[in-house]
Image 1: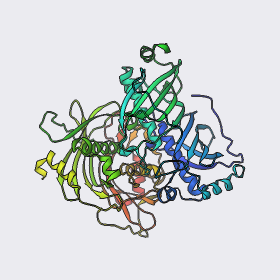
Image 2: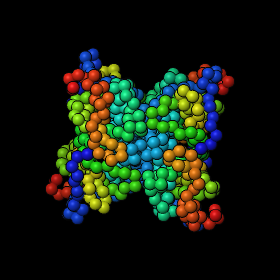
Image 3: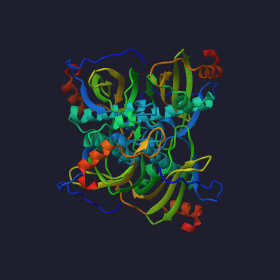
Image 4: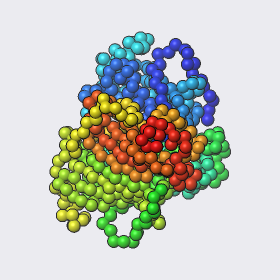
Length: 153
Length: 153
Length: 153
Length: 153
């Protein structure tokens, strides 16, 4: 694959991080993560970030408030393979906050050595789940994002 | 989402195309395709292209010849939602052929109206499944790609 | 695994059948179908049966009429492994038709030799997707099932 | 669905338990767990049980020792729906230990109220991943199972 990159695990960071075990069900006949499965994992990270990082309810957002967070654009780089049994760290940083969209950097790295496995730059839009059209980011969500990352405000 | 794009369904094309029904299992609680599922679908299209477009065996490549086709880079745009029951068309074009990699344009559009749903520019590398390192594209695969798209030769 | 069973491919049958290629994405690090993936495949067969065998619209049933077809009980036997690249046949037979439920026999066998790979006896209930409670099988669905399998009427 | 069942959460138990959040990606257009996804979750529970309950390495078993744990038979009952955002508990008990197989009871229940959502009786066989034939349960695995559940010895 391409050049190796390492994450400085001790650096000060606003990154929202959660550990993850690479499971049998994530892997393909080559014994490594089937790449669409990374997007499932990282969607789970977005859920955890909304619930635990922002202190909102992802499921309430979708099921009660009928607001979706679809991805409209993404760029992914896969740098090194992840194997069944690997302990990885998933990380999320908000890079840009618009009125109806946000740009995230989400990534997966080796939890011990910090080797970057893959990263995604991803634009999410807040939409109405009735019309599938973009709507303003809800004020409580915006406030929570800015509270965590004041430079975005 | 972003601007609508339509595919000219009658245009002369080297695109490898296969129809696909959007299934219940492709969709999320918003009733639309869960985006990682597009990558599963498009991985299936790459399989069909190798088997039927190139006349090789994808499964022989992986299981017997131990050659993988991992994605090392992708850029995806999601333009319009696909709903359960939609009849879509998946298309694949080789845009660049390197010695150990190739760039593909793969996309999903409405089978009747040609409306673009999403597209991905994707770089695949041929690797040894023993070492997960890049290897030369096998000569029979290169020959078959060039036969279909002479301008790449 | 357990004893081998073969399907008589020429026998007269009311079984609804559809061919399926075992794909890379269906398989696990052991190179064989990851068993939950069989249930995804067989859920797709139920979709095709409703659409093509019964001449109704599965997606209309779920999305417009808000009727679900959840499984409440299943018994599965896995007799022989399926490998990436295998051409299999999926088959569905209605074994019992109740007022709000039906019992299906769904199975997967080798498309050429007829060797049984796995089979499932599955009870489906028609439910309201508003309440998730059982409702009567819709009359058009019941009529179509009986038309195909008069002994159930 | 069928009759409701509750788990006595305070009862003495040999059950191996792990909590799990029902995620967006587990759910279908009806907003409830897509049933094949339960089997993915429960396969993850088997992984955790081997790693943490038995103190072995599931991934070492598969990748280095080339021993698989395929399911040859299962019976599942689905009693109540699980919704996106639910906190559930997954539990595993060994019910029978043979020479080359074991019978497990695995189940999912509401983590707070103990309401049973679904349960599976499942027979796993230890196999050689070279031949896909049954082999003896490895002595370290058998010893760890008996240590946890002496009545099985």
